[in-house]
Length: 266
Image 1: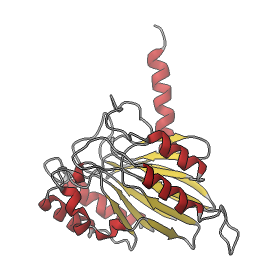
Image 2 (image 1 turned 120 degrees about the vertical axis):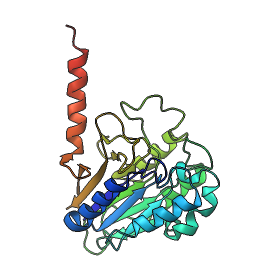
Image 3 (image 1 turned 60 degrees about the vertical axis):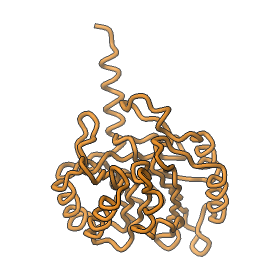
């Protein structure tokens, strides 16, 4: 199964139409994913005309399975009241793919007019109860499942993103505990516009950059993630829009090497 994760479009003054058009073409013609996940911040301000444009742009993708959920920017200026009008499918939060071998759950971390995220006790309990219904193996074929949780805000802080305590998830510790105890294999996040991945052994926490806005960080231009799942194994590539594909683990490895080099005494 192939999943394309696209995040932080920021449709508004920072949106790059040409980059989005390139992204649409290469996803439709080259990648042909089974699922596209838009992990929040579709808009810059949550305004009606921005949400309408986001709705129109997303329709350009030729994929029968598209999941959309909000980010903090989408909940600005009462966007939280109308987001579901433009994306009614965002109300659905549990999905089964590949004959039950992939279970995906979305969690809403956005709060009205707040940059920081929060999941909340009731939503964490719901996530735990929902995931507990799915055994580690499929019932009919005894094949290992892959459990995925999607959210907008970053679950764990990321290097090179500055002071993150005030814009992360306020109850991240509770959420991480719930993911670990529920047998979650992959957590998909956006928000910080920095491609990254934490490998916690059992759980991969995958972060996407911004796909088509001017708010990218450092050397990373417009990027998105490609998540391939085969035989219960998960592989993640970072794809530059109109450019090359690089394993996300390699990005992490290169960063560690650069930090070591820079920190060595002269």
